Length: 64
Image 1 (cartoon, one colour):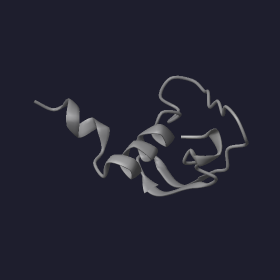
Image 2 (image 1 turned 60 degrees about the horizontal axis):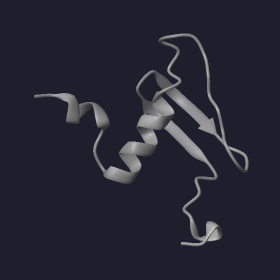
Image 3 (image 1 turned 90 degrees about the horizontal axis):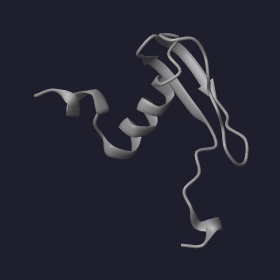
Image 4 (image 1 turned 135 degrees about the horizontal axis):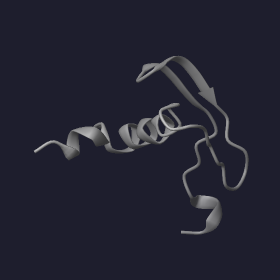
Protein backbone atom coordinates (compact mmCIF):
# COMPACT_ATOMS: atom_id res chain seq x y z
CA UNK A 1 0.00 0.00 0.00
CA UNK A 2 1.20 3.47 -0.77
CA UNK A 3 1.49 5.82 2.15
CA UNK A 4 -1.56 7.83 1.01
CA UNK A 5 -3.71 4.66 1.00
CA UNK A 6 -3.34 4.03 4.74
CA UNK A 7 -6.42 4.38 6.91
CA UNK A 8 -6.43 7.59 8.94
CA UNK A 9 -8.45 8.54 11.98
CA UNK A 10 -9.18 12.23 11.65
CA UNK A 11 -11.56 12.47 14.64
CA UNK A 12 -12.31 10.13 17.53
CA UNK A 13 -15.38 10.97 19.59
CA UNK A 14 -16.13 8.98 22.75
CA UNK A 15 -19.49 9.00 24.51
CA UNK A 16 -19.93 7.05 27.77
CA UNK A 17 -16.77 5.04 27.10
CA UNK A 18 -14.82 4.01 30.18
CA UNK A 19 -14.32 7.10 32.40
CA UNK A 20 -15.32 9.56 29.68
CA UNK A 21 -18.81 10.97 29.55
CA UNK A 22 -17.69 12.77 26.39
CA UNK A 23 -14.29 13.20 24.77
CA UNK A 24 -13.06 14.23 21.35
CA UNK A 25 -9.61 13.72 19.89
CA UNK A 26 -8.53 15.26 16.60
CA UNK A 27 -5.01 13.98 15.94
CA UNK A 28 -2.78 15.95 13.61
CA UNK A 29 -0.81 14.63 10.69
CA UNK A 30 1.98 12.30 11.73
CA UNK A 31 2.51 10.87 15.19
CA UNK A 32 0.10 11.81 17.97
CA UNK A 33 1.14 11.36 21.60
CA UNK A 34 -1.16 11.30 24.60
CA UNK A 35 0.34 11.33 28.07
CA UNK A 36 -0.79 11.84 31.62
CA UNK A 37 -0.52 10.38 35.09
CA UNK A 38 -1.27 6.74 35.77
CA UNK A 39 -5.02 6.14 35.88
CA UNK A 40 -5.88 9.32 33.95
CA UNK A 41 -7.45 7.38 31.07
CA UNK A 42 -4.81 8.00 28.42
CA UNK A 43 -5.01 4.39 27.18
CA UNK A 44 -8.78 4.52 26.72
CA UNK A 45 -8.47 6.25 23.34
CA UNK A 46 -6.33 3.36 22.10
CA UNK A 47 -8.87 0.90 23.47
CA UNK A 48 -11.62 2.74 21.59
CA UNK A 49 -9.68 2.47 18.33
CA UNK A 50 -9.06 -1.23 19.01
CA UNK A 51 -12.76 -1.75 19.68
CA UNK A 52 -13.63 0.09 16.47
CA UNK A 53 -11.26 -1.94 14.29
CA UNK A 54 -11.76 -5.36 15.90
CA UNK A 55 -15.41 -5.02 17.02
CA UNK A 56 -14.57 -6.24 20.52
CA UNK A 57 -12.95 -4.61 23.54
CA UNK A 58 -9.31 -5.66 24.08
CA UNK A 59 -9.88 -6.30 27.78
CA UNK A 60 -12.18 -9.23 26.95
CA UNK A 61 -9.30 -11.01 25.24
CA UNK A 62 -7.41 -11.02 28.56
CA UNK A 63 -10.08 -13.04 30.36
CA UNK A 64 -9.53 -16.77 30.64
